[in-house]
Image 1: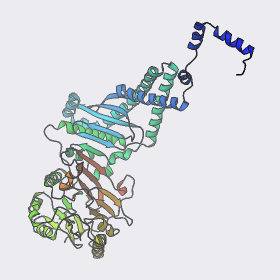
Image 2: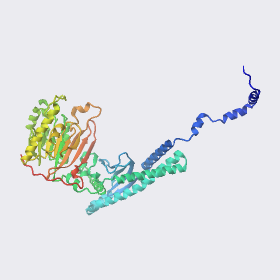
Image 3: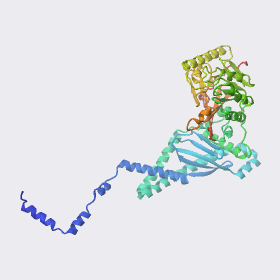
Image 4: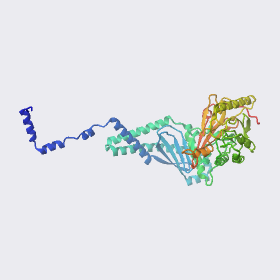
Length: 521
């Protein structure tokens, strides 16, 4: 064994003689490895992320608690609020009628306007002095502008207070808390700048209304006024709020839609698929919107058997002419039965018919597939049918009797008429779609007005009931606007209406040229 040097032995001997309490004290002051790890400075990205979370949550809590103002707008009491949002926009809540949504801006904040109640004293003053109605819109505009300014100030105070308070609670350092408040103010200012830069005053032209369906036309106006009377956002917000006054003033019934006599209103339905509830919905819409003509782009039936023909009898009592083309679930037996019903106009093989001031031409679906199968050559047969319809449309135009609207069931057939007619309507897909094709023809595909019939119970969620009101100018016979209507499917009681404008009818656009008057047939 190696011998240990004497000097080393002396050192070890002295260590052993160190009092134990000193050794314990020394060990007790030695930091543990976990303590050393915690004492190291945190990652700066983690600190920044934590500060952002504090700012966002604090600002949101501030807006939620104190970030709203109660503003009298004309004869109504309203509450205006800013809310965090991923999409921005403006939402006008008209309880209990529903809500109106506008794509007014793109920013992480949304403006909510809640119509709380109608003030009885101010309303009675309008009744007693009807001459004040002429200045009501200017008064409402001023009230909205004043409320918006108050809301901006209160929102600044709310986000700074909320972020600062939460920062103080989390960090317990005044400097950090003030930094959180300052950052919240900067975020709100940046959001306001983004909203200002993306502000779209014409968003009121294409609102989305949800709630009681029958009140929507009164809120959004008719086809002629949506092009000529909507100028700036504040004025139209005032008009909407003024119309809400009328809604609240009605006690037993909502105000009826006042149609523009220069507008032709077309109800487009499709793919009813033997749903008896569709007839009541269609009749209600015909009455509410004062529809001039109903257009059905097929699949009214499910199997096309003679036993189903009795389902079609209510068409005679819907209150408007019914223009129909055959779908792939409608048989020739179905078509012949409809031809014998009064007030029904069946179109096939490119035949044209003038109904309610519009000239329609259509072709039936070349396929009959009630079992939902695909026959060989189905796509080619659709294209051939569309080509036959396009040829008929060209012949009618050459004869001086051009069609205004073409009808086909499948979009693949409808695409073949591009360039021969301003508008073609189709269905089949069970969901709504719109596009302007290469040569200028607009294709409108309607969803299922029957909620896909019995197919609605096959999936996890019921299919919605979809239909549209199309507004045509009586002089030019061109599409001015359309309202897409969506109702909840089986077991649901929701309703949503959204207004759409063709590009050529947007403010500042060049109006479409007039076409020659149609010839009756």
